[in-house]
Image 1 (cartoon, rainbow, N blue to C red):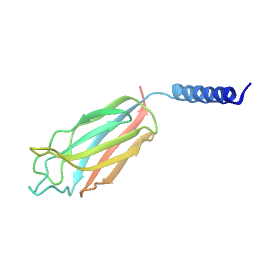
Image 2: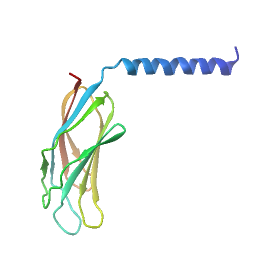
Image 3: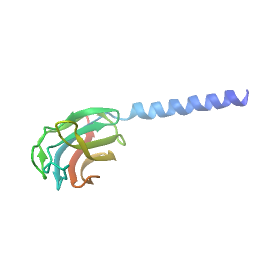
Image 4: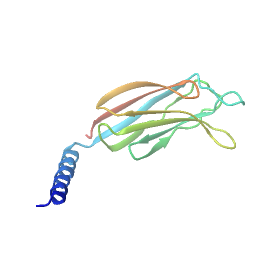
Length: 139
């Protein structure tokens, strides 16, 4: 067998092993909730009109409502995804809604773990975002 054939066989075995491990992992539910921001900064117009967009591994989960004229908004929305896996990436983007275009105030990104977690993220343009998430088996 040539060395290139051996390399291809090895690659196929590795890919099949990864697929088997991934397929054997139990699907889980990701829930993102309790979103609160504090000390948000704004552009020259003063007080931010903030909202949050929530993303998981490869897609959009949703968007909160806009909280007008509030440096310390909180949102009641909860976002769920039914086929999450441990180590998927969770990304939250905080925006200031404006008439012409919305300003990105900052992004929070982390690899999700099993269980319930609370996190605080410092935003690039000032302020913080606090949020919680749960990753648990599908029941």
